[in-house]
Image (cartoon, rainbow, N blue to C red):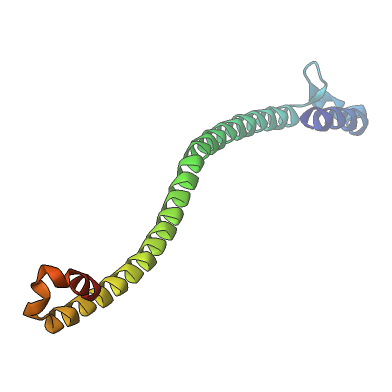
Length: 133
C-alpha cells in the first residue's frame, strides 16, 4: 500500500512540477524535499505500526495459550462439582429414607419393649419373643 502511494506521488510530482518549478524536484526520485520527508515519515509510522501490531498479536497469542491451558482444568472442576452435587442429592434422599425407616423401626421396638412381659423370657416362649422384635 505504501509503495503504491509513493509511486503515485512520484508520478504526479513529475506531471505537476514542470517548467520553472521543476527546480524544486531533488534527489534520485525527482520529488520535492517536503514530499521526501513526508514519505520517510509514513514509512517510519507504517513500520512502527507493523511492529506494534506484531507485538500485540504475540501478546494476544500468549494470552490465548494461557487461557487454553486453563480451560480443561475449569471444565473438569465444573464437572466434578456438578456430579458431586448430584451424588450428594441422591445420598441425602437415601439418607432421609433410611432415617425414616430407622425411626419407624425404633418406634416399633419401643412399643414392643413396653408390651414385653416377663413370662416371654421363658425359653419355651422364644418364638413369641422373636415375633415381637
